[in-house]
Amino acid sequence: MAWWSRKNKTWQQIKAATHSAKLLPRRTSLAGWANGDQMVYALNPAMLEIGQGGNSPMHGWGTIPFLGGASGILFFLIEGLPSFFKAWDLGEIPMWELALVCIASIFGAALLIVPLSYLWLSFFAVTDPTIRFDHKRQKVWMWTGKGPIEMDWTRLVPRVESSVATAYATVKTYRGQYAEVGADGNILVTHGIPHVFQVGQISAAEEGVRPAMEYVRLYMDAGPHAVRQPEKFLSHRTPWYAMVNFIGMADDWVRWRENRDKPGVAPAPWLRTIGFVLLFPLFFPLQFTNWLALTVAPRPKWPKELDALHAADLAQWQQQEAQRRQQDLTADRASEALAPRRKPVIRVNGEIVSGSETGSP
Image (cartoon, rainbow, N blue to C red; front, side, top):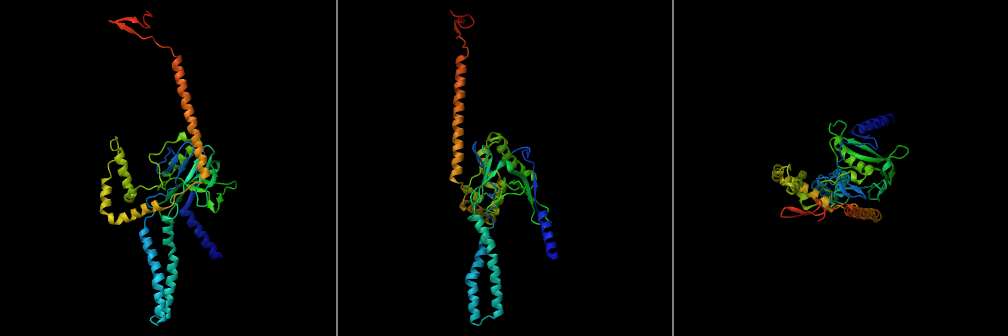
């Protein structure tokens, strides 16, 4: 027992050193500026919908090696193992050699879980479970495969989670998160799923995740008018050029083409393109599998009741906005009608014959 206690204490120390969460104050500014780029799927007066970084350009990378490994193990279990049994039955190999093959087959079957899990997560699991925010009701919905989890914004606590690969690594990655905490101070759990969600992409610095967290805070605390629309909304539908979008190269070309006539636009990514062409045999299979994974993977679907709720809110807001514009137009016309009008000035051969300067003729 003492040995187990020491081992458990050591494991907890390693876990604390490699994985920790820093709580941030509520209802206060989390960054000097708010940024919704590479995060927002939808933004309107009824709701804000964001992703959790699942549409990463690294999603699906390594599929070919994993597929090759899984195929090799399956081929051995289906074709190779029976041939060893047949050889033993014919007396061609001894019993100890067959035993070693069986042991290797057991380990191979266990290792098969790794590539199959990776392939499942890449092609058959939702790539980016989205989060929906409702400023009007101060509610947050987190999409899960077991149904959306509803959370109260007033109970959500911002935090920055940091993690490293090992206790001796020097490079950390940071995730901006919100967690719903109960009265006892613990994170709430529904159907085994903690009420914790990520905001935006992973960053190599804590300051890199705070602007995305501030974007969400402003929307929920101040309202939709407090945040600006991102330069580009995310989409679950992947464009065709994503298969050659190595390190964002295709996105940069599209952005350059759309803004090339504007001052201060970044130059075309020629150097990166040349490098991609030279390394095409190596990088294209990896990038192609990323595009394929994002294309065929299922997309999160919200319940019809929730979509109808926010559609009704948006329609109501549009109706109120139309009424407000009509009232402003009517008020402008009324003020113009009550305003004094100057009499027209008529000149004949350079002499004023009518107008406000000489009165009526």
